[in-house]
Length: 254
Ligand SMILES: [Zn+2]
Ligand SMILES: [Zn+2]
Figure 1 (cartoon, rainbow, N blue to C red):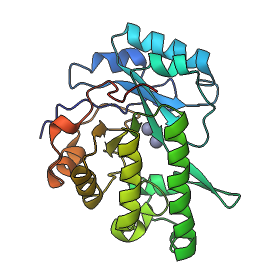
Figure 2 (figure 1 turned 60 degrees about the vertical axis):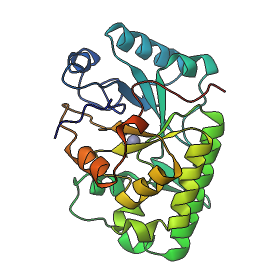
Figure 3 (figure 1 turned 90 degrees about the vertical axis):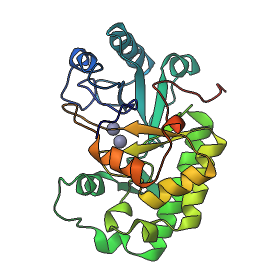
């Protein structure tokens, strides 16, 4: 299945990817895509100057340029820097809950199929902790949408709760609707993420019914591969292609 929708979420060696910007530029003819490296990234993406240099270098090669802004962690960027990017993906990679930092790395690696098992299943199976994680996720996402100029919510349901396996149990319907509502109110598109396979079908169907926009994100750090999982997810949830972003923000500037 060939999907021609614009792929917004692609890394390069300007953060933790293995592919140069020049190589990335050479594959936009295979299928349309941009680049969106992590901000911040140690030694590489530290501040506005690094971001503007990245934008300059990538745009000169003909690439559309975004960032994967680390929600809850990244230092603020100047409004002028944010405005000069073609789009901004916001994504959660960790969460602080009651003063304890919860990294999402192991859960993420498990969801990507890089680990055979998830060692913290028991810890995150605790209903009270799960509840606090969900509430905290909504709070930091809401704060970021208000402040950071996010256009796309990247892998929005990726967390240790997602690694438990049953997405409808990990994320009750009313919580899903609250997250979707936050995206709608801020006109933030919901990413269909190839690497993690999130959000799940019912979430995407709810978002579709509620009128959300969507965005394709392969989240590749290496070679450009076909978007097979994404194509199947879009088809299973019957998401109309015209609801997908096309390499630029549609959100009204604030
Ligand atoms: Zn990410
Ligand atoms: Zn990413």
